[in-house]
Each structure stands twice: as structure tokens, then as C-alpha cells.
Length: 478
Image 1 (cartoon, rainbow, N blue to C red):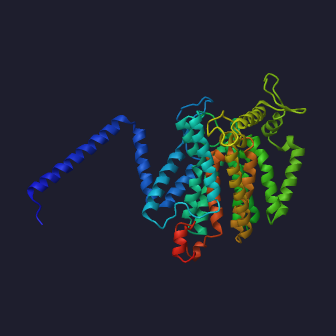
Image 2 (cartoon, helix red, strand yellow; image 1 turned 90 degrees about the vertical axis):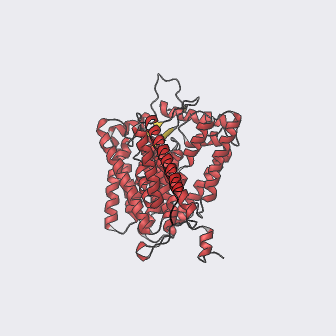
Image 3 (cartoon, helix red, strand yellow; image 1 turned 45 degrees about the vertical axis):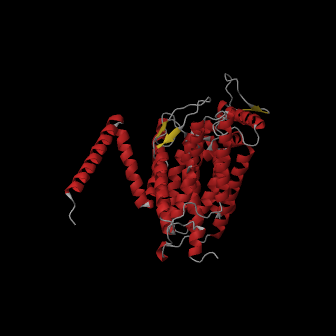
């Protein structure tokens, strides 16, 4: 069919106009933004496309970015001088989220939020934080943009849970992802070891001008719990050797974080392993050995660790805010936390049901005090429901699993969660993305292990957390 000359001319005009418009947009973009910003935009588009084509690629990028991405501040300080701190992983997670949403919109068989015993508690916890913040905005205690951005940061790691759980195809696939997470931990542990000779407290890479040893300590506490449980439960000599090797690598940077909240969390973590592991003798002997070291600690415990623990009970005479309990006086750091607890309780008494909203009260580095005053009784109950359900499910999964390696992962996560609950007394553990992203990644893997087939016997379709619609289609539901 011959196209008339007039039509060809019109088409050429349209193409020419579009080309000129595109060139104009590109030139304006290049003049208004720096080369780094343009490169970042191109990288974001490329990541979106790659994740849309291969979700696995996005999962590996996300796992590597959890501890290996820089941070920067958006400013916008509140009255208590709190800034919105953004990490590259926040943008990576956002891009991957949009790519996954687009993929699920096109492929109706893929589950966005699959069936899980954690769905209702997660929804309640997210809803409590959002509702308290919206009320805080109306009452004037929360700045609109900053408060909502913090709510997004508080709950963004739940996306990690759903994305991982919905894309696991087999045990083999799950353990490949776990190996990538172990690889990330090895890299950051080596980075921590390299910091020890400096005499400064050890922290993770890309922490900005001021490191966050407490955060790194919480992350290392979780990883130590998992590799120690794997070493106890596995029947594979190779897996046990790798687990013990990682344990030896993780412990020194953990100690040199000098994080007292992390040291305190290690005690219940080890007790959980003793209580539930089928191989109690090795860890019981290890605990006895550790108790002996405590008795003779100056000779075996690093001097900085020994000094850090003892400074807890050494008040500074020049500091007027020292808190004492009976005859025991505390150092400024511990005193500040105890003062925060008191202020949080006083503030909560004024708004007991919904609190002041996220960022609506003064900054405090204590998870439970912060939760109580920001989200009120509603938020505290929702959080307790979520953690209680998670503890119950992890214990159930551990007892149900038959593969020793799978059992080790579930037990390690259970012990790590108990340790992090204690860690939260002196840190905002459950809203710190560098602890919570790895934590919810491992939760997703542990929750799905009992449902995943062995990769050598055939893999199940993507969307491991089966939706009611797809389950009914396969005859799993009436």
C-alpha cells in the first residue's frame, strides 16, 4: 500500500518535532543537573528495567546494598534537631518496589502481599504508626513531610519481607540468597576488623562523619546468632566449618563496637540456643568458658571492652544529670537513656492512646520508650502482637523443619530476635534499616523454608506466599 506524499510529509514533521522536543528535554536536563545526578537517573532507569526482567537481580542488589550503601541527610531538622537521613539503599528499595509493583500488575499470578500469619500484625503496626502520625499532624506535634517520611522509613523493610517471600522458588534458591547475605556480612566484618587498630569504636561502612557502633553491634548480634545456630544444628562438616569460620570473623568487630546494648543482648541470645538446640552440650561448655573469662577478664577480654562495661557504673562528677538507682550511679550515656524513659512516660501520660506521632516528641535512643510516646498504647500493643506472633511462628517452624541446616537458620533467627529485643532497651533497634532489612530478609526465608521444595526435585512457581486466588486455581482451596 502506497502512502500518500502528504501523509509522509506529516509523519516526517511529527517525527522531527518529537526529535527536537526530546533533544530540548535532554539538553535542559544536562544543564539543570550535575553529571552525577544524570548518571544516577540513568542508573535508576537501568535498575528498574533489570528488576522488571529479573526479580532475582533486584534481590541480590538489595542484599548487597543493605550494609554497603552510603547515606546523606535531607536536612529539615525538627525542634529536636532530627534530620531525615536517606541511604542509597532507600532509593534502591524504592526502585525495586516500583518494578515489582509493575510486574505484579502485568502478571496477575504473582502475589503482591501473599498469605502469611504475620499479615494482620504487620498491618496493625503500620496502621498504628500512620494513624498516630496523622493525628499528630492535626494536633501540631508532627511536621507533615518529615513525619510521613519517617513513617515510610519505619515500615519500608516489610517490603523486603514480602518481596523475598513471594519470590522464593526452592530451598536451593533460598540458600543462594542466604549465601549472598553471608557474603555481605563477611565484607562488613572485614571492614570492621580493619578499624580495630585505629582505637575508635567499630562501625559499618558508609556511616557518614559519625559512625553508628550500636547499629553495627545489633547487626553483628543477629549474624552471630544465625551462624552459631547453624554450626550447632548442621550435620555437614563443610557447613559447620564455614559457620565457625564466620563466627571467628564476626566476634572481634562485634566486641570492638563497644556497644553495651549489643553485649547485653548476647546473653539471652545464647540462653535461647541453650534452651532449644538439640545439641546443647557444646554451647553450654562455651557459656561456662565465657563465665570463666569474665572472672579473669583483664587477661583475656580486650581492655577497651572491659573499660566500656565498667564505665557504665562510673558517673562523671562534672555532669549534673547523673541518675542513681539506690547506691548505683550511672555514666552520662546510661543516665540519658534513663532520663528518656522518664520523659517518655510523662509525655505518654498526656496522650496515652495514640501518642504524639512519629517524630512528634523529642529524640530518644530507646525503642520501647520511643514507641510508647510516639504511637501510644495502640502502637505498643500492635508491636507486641507482631513480635509475639513472630516468636511463636519461628519456634513452630524450628520444630517443624527436618533439614538440619534449615533448623539452624530458624533457631538462629529466633535467638537473634530475642537478643535484638534486649538490644532495643538501649537503641532504636526495630526502626534501624541496617538491622531490620537483614532481619526481615531472614524472616522471609525462615517462614517459607517449610513450604519450599528441594530445587533438585523441581521448583515451585514464583510467588511462594500463595494467594487465595492462585491456591484455589490449583485446587488447594475449596
